[in-house]
Structures are given as C-alpha cells and as structure tokens.
Length: 242
Ligand code: BGC
Image (cartoon, rainbow, N blue to C red; front, side):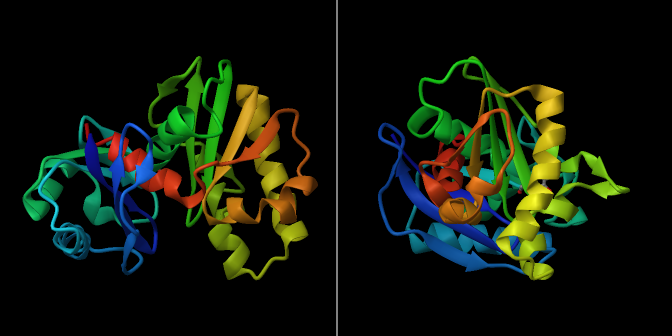
C-alpha cells in the first residue's frame, strides 16, 4: 500500500509518498517552509500544496507535533495554539481532499523505526527521542506503543526541558557539541531514572551527526541513531495514514 506521509516540524512540512511494505520513499521529498508559530490556515495551505505537488489522490498520513487522540489535537508544543482542540484528521481531509490519518510526530517516527529501522525485533523498553525544534518521544514496551508520551515536557527549571536541550537550543545559543551534549546528558539522566529503557533511538537532524556527540553521552542504555535518519518522520506519518 502507498500512503503520502507528511511530517510536520517546527519550521516546515516535509512529505513523500511511502511504500508501507518496504518503508521506502517513492519520490524525492518535498518541503514547504512555514512560519513559527504556524497559523492554521498556513498549515492547511501547506498540506494542500503538498498534495497538489504529488498529484495525490490516495490516503494521507500526518505526523503532528502535539498530542493526538483519535484524530483530535490536544496540547501543542511549538506549532501554535490555534491548532489545539481541532479535529486534525477532519480539517486536513478538507484541505487536501484525501482521507487523512493523524498521529503524534514522534510516535509516528518511533513506529517507523520499530518496523523498519533500529528498533526492529527489539523487545523490552525502547525509547525513541527526536531532537528538533522540540524534543519528541515515543515509548515502546515489547513493540507496543504507549501513545502520546510527552517526555520533552518534563519540567526543568520552570520550563519544559525541550527548551533546555532541543536541537533548536543548540543553534539558538550557538552551543558547541560538548556544551549541548552536557544538556542532553542532564535530560537523559532524568529519562533513564524514570523509565529504565533498554534501548534509546535518537532521531531528528542531529542524529545524522551522531559521530560528533554520541561518544560524549553517559547513559546506562545503548544509544543508537535512527536508521531511517530524517525519513523516519515521513515514513511514520505514512504509517499513521492507515
Ligand atoms: C510536542 C510533542 C512533539 C515534539 C516534537 C513537542 O513540543 O509537545 O508532541 O512530539 O515537540 O515535535
């Protein structure tokens, strides 16, 4: 089955059609830049533009950067308050003219890694963390997802810890790898104390630079980069479309 996967991030919508049997992208990814925070009309227009670009008529799956319950959007991290409380599956279906399935973006990326990537065949507790504008998390036990774990929102010095250790913070404060990884170590120490994962899979753009910083991590669990790299979000979004 082929599904158009749309991964919504803090600064862009990224999309490609995906073969769900293999987890492969079937065309070059297409990216639409958005404002941050992103007004609802702009986001819906971006989804429309993507569907036009691929001349897509089939199913669409969306990875959304906030809590998603049965297609309905709950608390939103960085995309903007206008999205909260919306029936996401319905408004995106209206904007695209396609059937739409919606899931949290990190849950989607985690599902893709569990099915096709670094988590394949892994039992026990597996935690997928995505470092981008925020920190996304997907928690699995024996391959089963516990949806909407929001481990980027663990409080730290009065704010969600993603405001302290996301990849966007590295860029904004111009931290070098050591300075930023020290922050990630603070974060992972808390997460390990709470969940004792057997494996931590790291995704997001910075996972491609893993050689620069994984050696500076002090975790009990094994830490591996996402095998699908940045495509995990798109492939996972497509999985959410069925
Ligand atoms: C949101 C999460 C999302 C993560 C990564 C956080 O701010 O609360 O739902 O998974 O950012 O986009």
